Amino acid sequence: TREQAYVYALASAAVAHSIARVCSDGSLTTCTCGAIPHEPPHGDFKWGGCAHNVRHGLKFARNFADAPWRQKSVRKNVEAAVNRHNNQAGRRYLSTQVSY
Image (cartoon, rainbow, N blue to C red; front, side, top):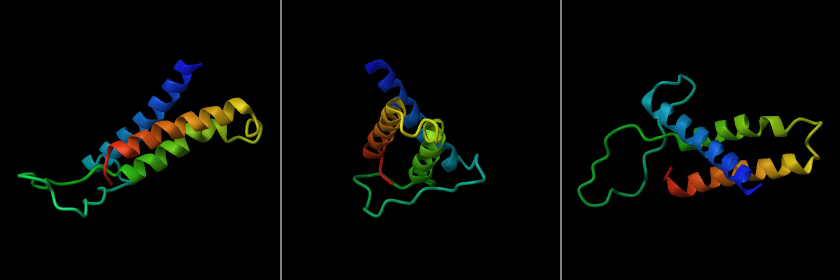
């Protein structure tokens, strides 16, 4: 259903965002800060510390959210393909909304 597609996309994006945030907090030992943007900040903005590690968050979310749909028994299943697509759509949307 459309609702299910939305929930899958939202959940995958939320996992990626959450992991990116805890990486920047130093709460996880498996990741570090994200890259500092190359372009200069606008206006009076001053860079204040550790960036969210969005790349790591996206990678973790892909491995976590897509794992049930990668098993050999469901790999050719249409539902599995649709759910992987919806997960990817959520992560793709997140990656367009943040800089990394």
